[in-house]
Every structure is written in structure tokens, then in C-alpha cells.
Length: 167
Image (cartoon, rainbow, N blue to C red):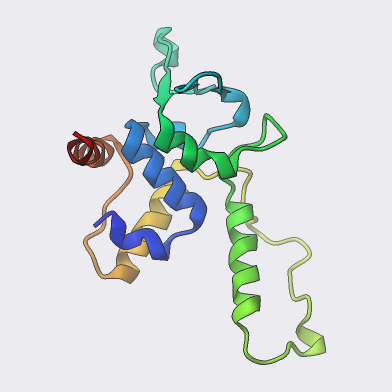
């Protein structure tokens, strides 16, 4: 069921799904990833979320990122260290560009720029847990499969199955 959504979600959402499957990260941790949160020395990188579920208990959270996770993250690393890695604004721009490329007729002059000057809702700097979940569930609906969500129980199952194929 996880693989069935791959062609129906953005590259950003698929990268987050893969990272969760490999690392067991919570959705709130994967949507808030920034380059500045990564320690990229050595064979295994370390991700220390700037916010996480148990920080109010004084607990430290570190996620180890092996070779496959590093490979997934490489295209998303930003020169602005505080920029979020996975941006819905970038996903929307990619989707609009893809639609423009697939267009069969030329654009009418009156339709060149039909963007609203001040839209009610613009894409944010990063995905929220809710927007990430919605993207997955919309893809599930389009694929005609039972809906699933990116919360820990699912990521543990996905992670367990990934580990079984590795060993």
C-alpha cells in the first residue's frame, strides 16, 4: 500500500515517506527537517530535531541516517541552513511547471498570469503534520487503496518490513 502512493504524491512527500520508513521518525520530526539540524560528518549522519514530542521532559532526540537516508536527503539539502528541506511551495511550483509542460495548446494572452494577488491560503514554508497526512490520504483515495497515515504505528511497520528485506 505504501508503494502504491508513490506516483500520486509529490517528490517531497515521497522523500518524507521513505525517510520515515527507514528511520522510524515521527511525522512531526520529518516535516521540520532543516539542514542546520543535520550533523553530516562520517558515514552515519545524525538528525537532531529542533522541536520534538518529548523535549518538554528534557529528553534529547537523535535520529541516525545511514547511506540510503543520506541518498534520499541529498537533493533536498539547502544552502540556507534554516530553510526547511521539504516545502509545499516548491512542490506546488514543480506541479504547475509539469502541467505547463504537458499542455497541448498555447496559452491565451488573457490567461498568462491568473494568480491571485493575495490568495486566502498560500503554501507554507514547510508541511504540517496535517498537510502531510492529507497528501497521503488523497493519494490513497486516487489509488483506490485503503487510507493509511504517517503516524508512528505505520512507520514502525514500514520500518520493520524494510529491515526484514535488508537482513
